[in-house]
Every structure is written in C-alpha cells, then in structure tokens.
Image (cartoon, rainbow, N blue to C red):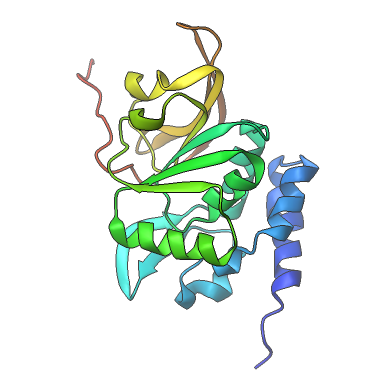
Length: 225
C-alpha cells in the first residue's frame, strides 16, 4: 500500500475545495500549506485530513460529540475576519486546535476556551507539537463569551448559536469582528458581526450552512408566531 502523499493532498485541498469557495486571500491559502492539518486530526482519521467534510473528534477512542470544521469553512472564516498582526482573538471551542493555530499565525495572541477537558488536552498537545506558542488555553464554559480577557479584536465561535448573546457581542472592541453560525436547524447562516461604534453593530451574512450547537448556547427568550 502506497503511503499517503500529504503534500499533494494538501495542495489539492487548497486548489479544489478552498479556492473555489471564494477564498482568494493568498496569505490564507499560503497558511493552509504551512500548518499541517494532518497533525491535528485524531489518528484514526488521518487519511481524511484533507477531505471536504467535518471530522469527528474522537479522543482516546471516545467520541466527544464534537467535530473539526471542513477545511473550506475554516479558510473562509479566517479570510473574512481579516486579522491583523497586533490583534487579540477569542476562540470559543478549541477542539483539535487546528483553527486555533491558523488564528494564531495571523494574530498577536489567541485566547481559546474549551469546555471539554479531553479536547482541551488534545488541542494543547497538537498546538505544542506544531510549535504554536501565542495561544492561551483555558478550560471553561464560554457560551456567553469570556469576560476575563475582554475586550477582543475578534471572536470566533466554533459551535452554532440559536441567537447571538448580547454579552458576547459586547466583548468586542470598536472595530472588532465576531464570526459565528447563527440560527436553528434547518436554517443557519455563517455571519460576521462588526462593532462599528459603542452601540452600533453591522452584520454580514456569508453563506448558509449547518453546525452542531455550542454547548450551553443561549436560547431565544420567547418564540413568536
């Protein structure tokens, strides 16, 4: 059996999946060639590291119920956030640490909060092995944001939210951007929310998608018919 050619698979991922999804920022495409995605997926799924799919996060043979995003989603969100080298980022849900690593290459520091200690340990070991040092990993429930290190230049939420909590939005600096998938099954959309002033926010809907909900995500206070 031929060993897998990771470099060819990585190149094909960028050219056949990511670029056709309107990811045209060369710095993002270059980064996907540098950060080794196969080093962040669970060992059992290594051959699927570059597939156009979510990858289940099984740690020590146990299904955590979480998944890695598909590569094109990671790349598109990274592009739309347009991070700058001096910026501070909050990531809600560390998972495998792969998206964390991409964010860290673009920003000054990433605070990444994971509610599941198994995933926090898995992500931490992956990031350490990849030599990513400008990440502060914390364990806890950040479903309402992470006020301890606020405010942030950017916030990324890796699970879907039925509604965007006001508390989370308020942790953005003016000019800050928040990337999240908002809505409930079957209608969810990936959105970028920008804080344009102290009390002003603008929302851009990028694309429709589906993402498993963030644990303990805030629910709408009431349903109106």
